[in-house]
Amino acid sequence: MTQLKRVGVLTSGGDAPGMNAAIRATVRACIYYGIEPVLIKEGYKGLIENRMKSADARSVANILNLGGTFLKSARCQEFRSKEGRAKAFENIVTAELDGLVVIGGDGSFTGAMLLQEEHGLPCIGVPGTIDNDIYGTDYTIGYDTALNTVVEAIDKIRDTASSHNRLFFIEVMGRDAGFIALNTGIASGAEDILIPEQEKTIENFMESLQKSGRGGKSSSIIVVAEGDRSGGVFELSRAVEENFPEYEVKVTVLGHIQRGGKPTCFDRVLASRLGVAAVEALKNGDSGIMVGVRDQQVVKTPLDRAISKHNQIDNHLMKVAQIVSL
Image (tube, rainbow, N blue to C red):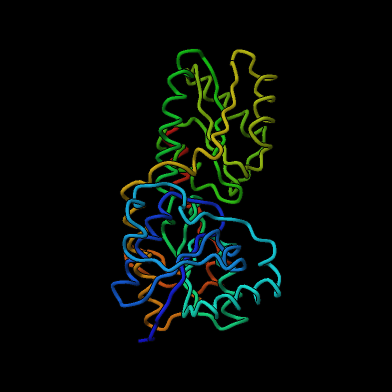
């Protein structure tokens, strides 16, 4: 067991519902194990600007149910340089931090890994991103809340789509991964789902839409991940207008609404488990790893693997989507 006196916690990258729950769990796990927790504002920028403050159990009261991150998050170009990281480490030494818990995604974990490699600081990653694309965990913090937010929005859009013989293209987040699009598309009864992992041309999509028409569908919901390779929602909508004049085509880009909102019970529990696991990993002498959940069990994955690999789309789930959309 490693003797730890002070441990810092920060959030970095895009915000995700449940980050506050992870901060809360990290702080209270530190206190439980006799460690002084230190809150770091605005991610790695806060390390460079020395925006650190000691915390107690009450410092994280009443944040469990809040979306976003009360520590705030910020992009920090300076931290990308060796000089910037050296400056951050000087402040870490001055603050007498024995370890760091980083809640975020790929970019955040890259920063943690470099701090460890260049300066020997023990760092533990906690996966917080709505995209669910981090390797080494079945679920990332914020993903479940984002799914529920998207499904609720699509359910409302379907009401008006079915009332007016309309075809709605709904763009959801997922520049490099289609987890949100695939799962919400199935859950909301989408007629088609377009994701980055699937090679689908505009011509292929037109064929699918024609089949839907022959099947008697008078309205359609098409869920499109923002990183889809078929041209994007606006190009697709123009193609439909040209080839299917009987449809009134509408486009809805859900955007950052997917990041906000109160975290679901699932995300609150997941974040609490991983915040505690991160502190326990530091106590056990671990460093340069991410804590995640596989088959309901907490697991550890080296940060370099979590960064270099990505979760894969379930091909069976894609088949399910095809079958139930008939």
